[in-house]
Amino acid sequence: MTSLPFVVHATKYQCAVSPQQRKDCGYPGIRAETCHQRGCCFDASITDVPWCFTPFSKLATGECAMDVYKRRECGFPGISEEQCEERGCCFDSNYPGVRWCFHPLTRKDY
Image (cartoon, rainbow, N blue to C red):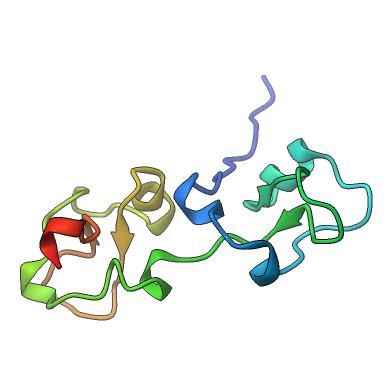
């Protein structure tokens, strides 16, 4: 039996990058499947910008910037960053003793 490699796909949220901010993650002619296997986003609906591009982290958007003690659990002990982001949540392992996988802020939190 052949085992397939574990591939992490970027979430829809992580791929909501404006065309001007897209950072190329592929090469000319890359297919969507190959792009996704790289953990990147693919959108061929806009011309003259990269179609295969790097997803952005929620930590960079501010939705995950909050007091570490106000984090609401979104994962489980030992969850990986990839597993956490697949759930649409934030991951930050810079602070020991607090939740590393947590729900992003919502509009009502602001």
